[in-house]
Length: 393
Image (tube, rainbow, N blue to C red; front, side, top):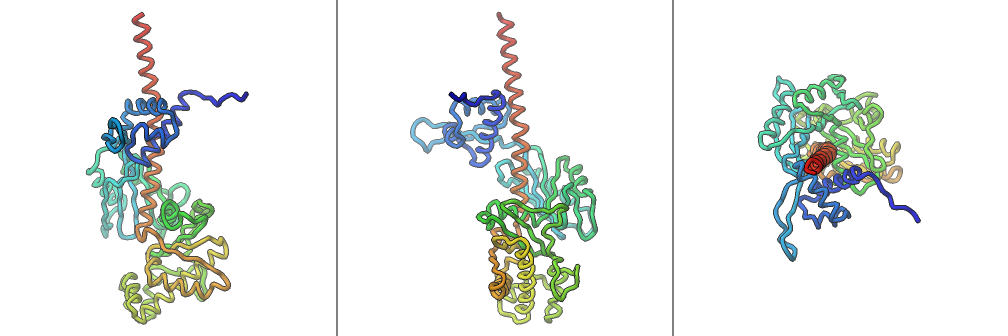
């Protein structure tokens, strides 16, 4: 007869504790009976773990359940002051900061353009501090979405060259917490993978057009960053008759194309796109050329990776440009069929991805601290009780 699996009680309580914390983070306040149903643990195990967490202030009472029959049962929830994570989206012009708790709920938000002359780190830190003034609790970690190539050690390589991790180190020192830096397009792709247009796709490439053009590549449900973080830098994919190394699309390219089509190069891209939607012939010609370039970039990716679909994000999700890409894709369909869909989050996709990653990392960090801490506190109290009992004999 096979023996049942067994293990140290501390390990079992750790696993049970993590299951309960994850469930409360995902579902919000629950009764003990609801936790039993959600986790599959016994009522005794749930009660023991909750007692352990209550002693370490990991969970707190969260009202009564008056919807079910019988006596009202008390609900518990994650303690509101466990800590927060900051999600930051940095673009060339501004920073957008969101403070989230372990459940992923946004607790504070700030947005501000970078000063003409000023330090980016100080500007971001000021926005984070403004968010923190609205809540109580420690800042545990920060996730930052930035344009440019991000290396494995958190360094940024942009138009000014590699920074060797100086930005990350400086921000971590200024905020007094760990900082993770990630490419903004990669975070946009993770947002789509988690709960957006890519959630039902095995593989896809997100094409985000803003000041530049970048791709976030997901293969078999996993984000592909590449060996040195260069994967997805499709703005420089060669296209005839452009010379090698010339950008295919981006702010400067659109200005040149606008001039070539008799349009004002100083007009922002969204104005040209809106004009095309309204039927302006020059704007339509401009957008048609942009659509051709985008579709050819997608075709190059398709020939190498063959993703299930392409997700258009940023300005690429504008209806006028979506139509232009679709028209070129239809012409290429006989030789290279490609499927295009539109981002679920628009220009906020990088920030949504940063929020998701920040909340997930916050849960992992806080939970890893809570379970051993609760175990130690429970063990210490048990030892104290034993001393008292033995001393009274």
